[in-house]
Length: 154
Image (cartoon, rainbow, N blue to C red):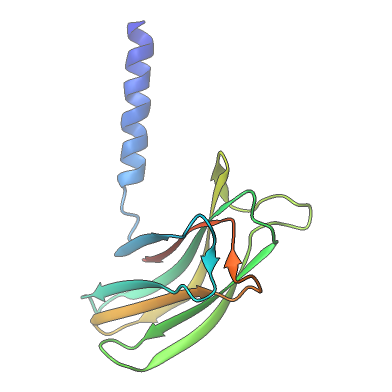
């Protein structure tokens, strides 16, 4: 019995350590999507403050989807601004969530899967406040099966 308890404690501490590792990220956040469906008019906003200038950054967009998501792909409209500015750049990115064989791509547990794709790589930025706004570009007015949308800056 003591051996099982000890093993359980070791596994729990190891898991906590792995999830607490920084992996070089300077910003990482998820926004939860309404379980009734992500409205075509609902824009998720991420406010990011970068202070360092000597580094090149990679920005990744992330999705947590349910296995009940109805499509193979997900198209997102991503708008980002130049620091402290009203100038916005708009991009569309594609997530392939299900492969041709019908298998869900990404890492998952239970009914929830997570996938990360590059948005911008190796960019040199000025210090300042950035905003990234994300909306979906799918045909549904209320897109079901998307649980969370995230941004990670490394």
